[in-house]
Length: 211
Image (cartoon, rainbow, N blue to C red; front, top):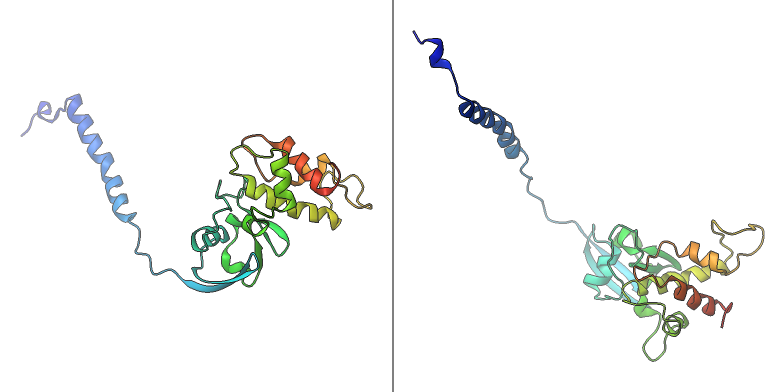
């Protein structure tokens, strides 16, 4: 019959046995966590009026409007920044309203009118907002600039339409183009270079409030 001394384990043996026991659930759990095979993506036909031109695409239904513009239509002026709707670099104008194209699916905008930075102006005929950004040096690296310009164009139209913001003092009177209104309405467009004051000057000029 074994004596009590034969059942003794030294510290090293005990640690080795404990480690082996602890690893068993992880090994079994890892086997169960293997991903299941993924089927073929679901595709759908999407028609978009982009910068005045009708474009037809056959897209994975999970494709964002941003990726449809950049990867499928090769309109790379619209930038992919945070991809979470926080920086505004992907701003485009859809049916007259500015949106973060990274947060919306292309299939949600069938037959919509989409305007990107490429559709606002050309090198020979700049849009007034583009010309004002150049004049007032409203950019440094330029990465956020397409989104800033598209957002600014739509923002001024919002004010003309009488849409108030959180800083509009009198809701019974037409909204005015002011520094405060511009900064509030453009707060969703981030400029890492910090060219905000020049951006405001450019937008004030386009609005006719400043030369």
